[in-house]
Image 1 (cartoon, each protein chain N blue to C red):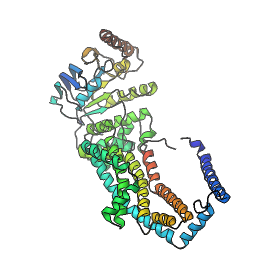
Image 2 (cartoon, each protein chain N blue to C red):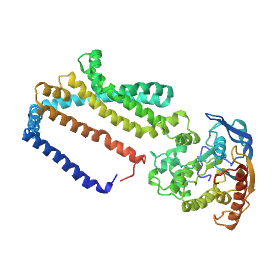
Image 3 (cartoon, chains in turn purple, blue):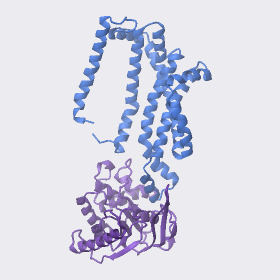
Image 4 (tube, rainbow over the protein chains, first blue to last red):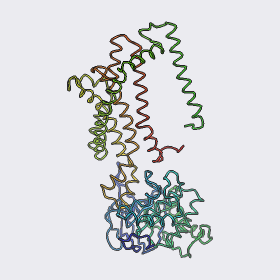
Length: 271
Length: 259
């Protein structure tokens, strides 16, 4: 991974994320809406933490808080001990929608953040080429965004995020809008990528099997306002197969926790 | 869009236009209407050949086009700048939008009297009409394009470490381009209305002036002929200047299926 890092910037270590008694309240037209918390959560350096929970439990809000897009109403979020006050390229978010820029081709999308860092043209070519090779999109440099399939777009978005070599990846259901086959192939890609470059990952998903397949630790959140309901450790060797029976067993266990939560709250949302 | 039928459709359009001309010729030949109110296609063709031969058609076209190009450039510059301000400030947007939407309800010809009072009989009045007719539409489209940039683009920009200026230049402006382009195209059409309207009422040269003279002299063939020239020129310029560009932008931005 160090070969990919811009020469000017030393490759960052994965960072430790800590949320202490964090809550977020939104003011709607009618009332105050308590979206999240109070919640305390830690992700160790290089740890992959999946967040699962019923719809509307504030999972995405949690990511937005860590990303710095919104500020917490109370509590504190720190990255390696430093308080998060604004968005930064040390925590790159991968959205459900790949949100690529259609006026740029694949190469320029991946190079987008690097250009902002004033990487020289000569350095850009090999770096972007390596990144695209990593996400198995070598040769697609000049393709336009709308010429790509959903899975390819998401891989470009991944390459664009990894280009900045952030210590933290924040993933908001990145595979949620893809078909099952594409998704399963991406699980393998994603694990391979993270195997090469250790990142601290916060990964929001609805899919309990996805969580069990990818995460070191799965945090089950309660209905709104989201709080930690249960924590499931996943101590399986990597890379994991999506259909591994152990993955299935753990997914069932996580699902049971979720069901119990929804029975308690009487929610009818599917997880 | 049914692409498979596009060849058949083009033939259909040509046949339709020929049929229309045929009916026109037929009605004119039957003498249902006097020739001074409905000229036949052949009479129109003959009159236009005369106008072309004595140079007045070319002079008129040249005059209208020169005014249009200059007036439109001023108008587009103003429209884009004002639109930019509207896109960046919701206060500016609210104020100017209501004003512009109101002004847009005016047909371009309704700008002519006040233009003459403000600027007298020179070409300035014509430029004023072009700008007044076309600028609001371009400003509104540009403002909308900027204000409606998908929020997730802005989040990505923020996330990848772009400041406000870089976000504006590298994300907001390109994201707003398709909408802006549509506005510019609309502005061109409205400006074309404006220039002919203004010339119609007060000018000594130009397509509008030729229309006016046709009516003064009860020369229906000239009136219809100049109308046709105005239509054809408008279509041609629209295709030449904007349609191709707009199509290419929309294709690149993935706003329509590639052919």
